[in-house]
Length: 253
Image (tube, rainbow, N blue to C red):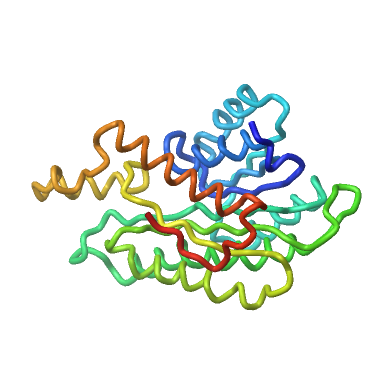
């Protein structure tokens, strides 16, 4: 355990799944000694996730919050809670997202705009409110200068989500210009093809079209483990303070 995040406060959104990106990142952050505020729209697995973290890392503090990551009041509140409870905010991982299970002929305008609202708006809100909180200093907690890392999740796939992912990447690349000289950086992680709950529908759709063998490059356990290791490496490069030179990047496998 390197404890590179010891004494630092991190917010992670979209933590419902006990098997996906969020679970891996939560335990990775806990392993590094972070104080965690975990937020998800569904309360389904929050108690179990909290229990698992506390059992694995009994010295770590973790708070779970049921809220919508695309709701402005909720994001403003979680950032304020970080300041009130821990007197600092250092990392915000905007991992929440929404994937439609509709094929193109069945996708409505309302459905497309809902995807935009959830997947792009939540990134804007995360940057707006977490950056303001990251500028706050507190000498008693060891934060004497502004600074932090904001991480956005996008997809590295050339799929129906591509338009939204371009928006997410553009947000990361443009908002940093308004945060110059704050030591706050914004990066996007473009994840590879991995079987998580949110994109299970894509594999189901491929199976219906008879393309399952062509669309399952991650099926072997060894390859899946390699990709998880790669994603964790990207994550560590993005939020570790030794990687302060990485900014405004879309990190893609």
